[in-house]
Length: 459
Image 1: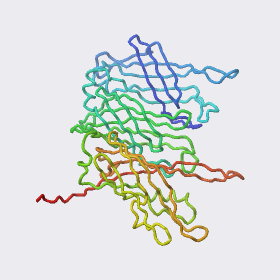
Image 2: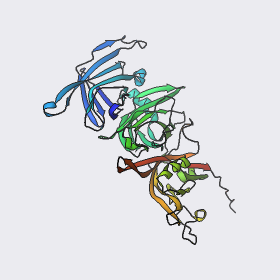
Image 3: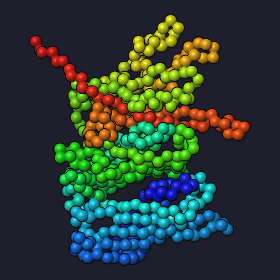
Image 4: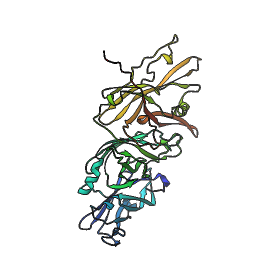
């Protein structure tokens, strides 16, 4: 990560480092969708004591990458440098599983966000972990976490005008610790990647498995990356934990990605979720429960959105409180019925599913998506009351069957995610009126509350 954001530089980078048995070193660095290859003939320095766990051997390396900049008469070559420090322990040594190599990347130049120029001397700092997936002892330890997981990416610190919904991740962990990840970030960016879960730690006597995530949209300003930690809770149902102080940073340096259009954003996302049961009967599991949609912080979100409505108009109907029904593995809402008065206006208290909530649930992955409407009403220029909709708004979320009680989510959250509202602004720029489009993101949850069933005795 770099903390120098001048000229809207990409703040995150991804590193893959390889050391051969012959001592050759190479690394691939990905920044804003571009790859840079670094190499060295071997380590430049070593210190420590072989066999001494209190002072283990430590290796240092300096890798270089020659980068061509410009074209024609302005073409030039510059040298980028990577400094790496790694602890040298046997691959079956448990201490190695939690060790991370420290990395510093010094880029001589990097293209700015617009691609029209360069910025000099951009430094990234971070760490890498070793891929232990072929180590037998590691497999035995990591195999205890094997399975499928669903996690919300909670954004409690997002400011007004920034994406305030929760993204989500689905994770498949193999017996060797290899990870396949998919999901969406709260601005609507889709994510799919492979990863290694190659770091172990311990928290309060519990084993913790950590793995890195990284996403970048080439030729744009979006990037996200960080670590997710899973804690084994003793009953075979690991959960994401904040105890390791790990988060996922989501960055978009495009001013158009925010409500005011002045600056981009940088948001910390906190994983909350855990093991997902792909085979249990959901209808039976939630038989004595009531499920209902909720737009979390809905009043604040609708107040913000009301700025885009005609003067004197306000929102009148939205999906919060709309009941959802499980039938087998299918999730549904009642069919919309709009009750009209003599003026052919909707009588909200008599309507059924006025927001036209339409969920689609994928049992195998736990992903819940769909559409709904936001109704608003007011008096038009002719003095007549009218009702209109922001129709077909899309929402995306994931079912969370296990999560840690750490304050990120209320205990009655069944699924969590976000919904997107495309809005546009007309702004004055000198003597011109400029229209700017923006996708607002807010939180969409499904809440689950106890609803005991009165079972009649059989005659």
